[in-house]
Length: 437
Image (cartoon, one colour):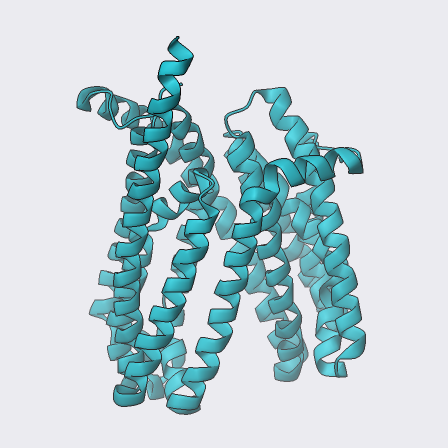
């Protein structure tokens, strides 16, 4: 194995073209899979709103927020490390690692269910009840996340997307039944059954039955924890930043301007499909490319960033041209006054897409410490620039401040990626002569 920046430009271009052909198919399946997941979550929101009313929707939202936090921990502590440590292994070794990850996921899910139930009992009924609604569905959702990640790692994205389609169909049928017995438990259970169906199909596809607890614990400590601890810390920083950012803007802007800002941001909700879809296919592809050379991996990271940037750019142009009409059509005429916020928010989305591939490259390199430091720096920039400019210029200042933070943070991310890549290439060049001897 020779990892370097060398290999000749023509050879590198040829390798990237072959890599691109394979990964494009996986990315398309990733879009289908992520589209089904987003549609399922949207169906939950619509059903809760129509059947339970504003109060019921609020209770469901409280539980769903903590549920998403549990999933983010699972990705950070198990799924992403699994891809990084096993994507380059043989079939049997990958299966062994996935079985260990299954046991680790079950263990983590058990902890999160206990925490959720305990919090549900200790908090006021409206909040605690929302948490309790999602407790039964944490385990199947985590297993589904693990198995879909494993399928895309093994370049079996079509099977992962098929499972997502089946899950969505189950949810649609179950939601139709809940209209006859409208209750918060019925609505959330109808949604949860889709995740259960996908998890069972994923288990059949991967054959990743749980391994022994001792074996799983050893795998997680030795293989997953070195990267997972930093990704877990990164996840905590991201969630903490989002909460603090919202609270500070609410205090500075007031609810009216904050509502207008959030409405403009929600026009780009469709773009939340792009990042996860490219990531689920991109991370294993970059990990495998890294086994060949740093140049291949960085080239593929740049290509993925370019795809994300191009998709966001097309969407931004379409929405930006008719931003006033779109704001009025989607949210009502009172939101037309906030249409000017669409441009800075769209540019921020554009900048975020432009560094997606480099984020995946750092994960593939197990550079968890660098990712954690990046999120710390990004949080400081966002809170300083966006909130600072909001004090003086209101919602427009907050939007442009966030864009400026994304621009500066994007530069930091690219520098980090190439520094880590150069260091890894240097290490490979040092090891290679010893192997040759």
